Image (tube, rainbow, N blue to C red; front, side, top):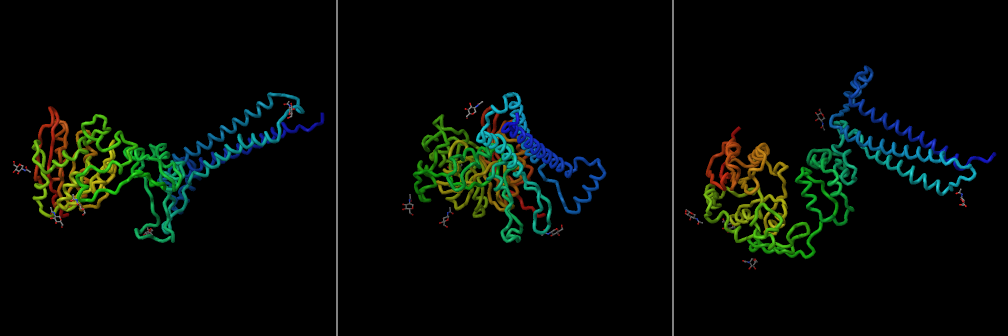
Length: 472
Ligand SMILES: *[C@@H]1O[C@H](CO)[C@@H](O)[C@H](O)[C@H]1NC(C)=O
Ligand SMILES: *[C@@H]1O[C@H](CO)[C@@H](O)[C@H](O)[C@H]1NC(C)=O
Ligand SMILES: *[C@@H]1O[C@H](CO)[C@@H](O)[C@H](O)[C@H]1NC(C)=O
Ligand SMILES: *[C@@H]1O[C@H](CO)[C@@H](O)[C@H](O)[C@H]1NC(C)=O
Ligand SMILES: *[C@@H]1O[C@H](CO)[C@@H](O)[C@H](O)[C@H]1NC(C)=O
């Protein structure tokens, strides 16, 4: 029979060629990944390679340190895997064709089917592999003057295009040094973002310019897990639909804000009333009672039953007029800052929304909330603050090494003569000595110092300490 073996033969031939091409691609990819290892100095036994390595790298200032070879090889492995799968699938298809063993003239593959097969089973996977390869950013020469080979940190870790865009350094437009004295602006994210990759990609998954998801709680979870700072986003944040103008400042300080000014979607409660400490289902545990103004109004101005409590008036009387700015570090709704404001002292209050709208509450009272986790160095310059007040968060759970880093940071920020006010710190009685040592190591002047029992094996501790001048 002289009939040409169209179309099965043709398909088989095409498949053969495709396999050859794919094989070639796989080899290229392997060789290029091998090359990266080799240029990073993994195979230095060969003399020629040594020569090449030592001759080329120092001359051209090719620095491979900091290049994320693990991320790169991960991505290459991904591509190789895709290609492997494709090849397997094609081979299987060819095998099945051979098995069918029908008379050639009866085989029935239309051109359309053939086209569809090529599109879906061959071209699409090939395209995906191609894109994945393209996304690998190899180090390139950067910098205007002192060119060094540097890879953008973490860039090969993420596939999401918006994250990659965010962390890519932005060169100054005219190619000059900017007012900060740098050639480019580097947007940073916390290195632990690598550990929360899928959550971060979810957080960064939006249409540019449209509304963001109502996902501040996802963002906060990322921050608390060390993905801090988070990348900025290019979407519009949602606000309460019925937002009212805030109360005037002469009324707002000691008034529970309007419920309508908070988006309640991600909280247990749906209004401020529900946040009362009497409600067992209020959805938060730290600072219970902070949303009850009658209780808040008593703090720091009335003699309390606890001997460890210190009054604001006593503190300010130590240095009249000298305490002007400060930080309240803890979990609160801003009552300390409100009282201090009445004394013409400006206090910034740190706040996390741990189950309740702490940030919104502080801001609606007309005070400044600072949305800050324990992960970061304080965003204040050295020797600037007159006062650091802390209550509520520093208690026995906290790791001693972490406390040490935090205390040294506070010491950095306090000005000479500034005050550290530790307010109702509490811990196990047996741990007290460890914490005492931490507070005492700075050799601050003790204005007040009091310990009193909290329960059978727990104690409260308060202190008012003054940072000494350091003439060095
Ligand atoms: C081949 O296709 C024609 C028309 O599409 C159909 O009539 C015929 O039965 C098919 N033959 C086989 C073996 O599938
Ligand atoms: C480039 O490097 C040299 C030597 O390391 C240094 O003196 C010079 O200031 C650098 N120039 C810039 C623009 O950073
Ligand atoms: C607060 O100030 C506004 C305007 O200054 C005034 O109309 C209002 O009566 C004041 N409220 C209180 C409670 O003093
Ligand atoms: C607190 O107690 C002290 C001494 O007992 C007293 O002198 C002071 O007036 C009291 N202050 C207030 C605000 O009650
Ligand atoms: C705060 O400042 C205002 C305006 O300068 C002044 O009238 C008021 O007496 C000050 N309050 C205190 C407690 O010093």
